[in-house]
Image (cartoon, rainbow, N blue to C red; front, top):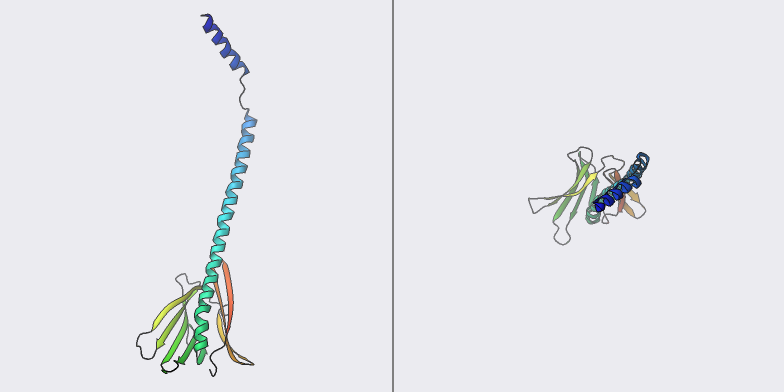
Length: 187
C-alpha cells in the first residue's frame, strides 16, 4: 500500500510540473513550417520551370540547325536557285549530277502544323530517272512570319549568294539562324 501511495504522489508531481505547448508556440511552429515548405516548393518549381525553358530552347536550336544542315549543301550543289514561286514553296533548287547528267530537283516547302501557329519545313527530292520522289520533314515549329523565315538571293561581289533566315519557336523560346550560302558557280 505504501508503495502505491508513493507512486500516486509521483504521478501527481509529474502532472503538476508537466508543461505543454501554448497556442502561441504552436502557431509560431506552424508558421515556420509553412515558410520552409513554401520556400522548398518554390525552389523545386523554379528548377522545373528552368528545365522546361532550357529544353524548349534546345529544341528550337535543333530545329534551325536541322534546317541549315539540309538547305546549305543542297544550295551548294544547285545550278539554279529559285526562291518562292507557288504558295508554300520556300525554295526550289535544280542541278545535273556531275558525270551522269541526271537532273535533280529539291523543293523546300512550309506546311502548317496541326496547331496552325507554326509550320513544318519539308524537303522533296526528285531525281529524273526515278518516278518516286523522297520527301522528309526537315524541321518543325518554324515561325511563318516572312520577316523571321525567308530565303532571298543577294548579289555579292563574288557572285550571288542565298540568304536563308529561319526562326523556330518552342514553348515561347525562339532561336533564329541566318545561313549565307553560295550556290555552285554559274547559277
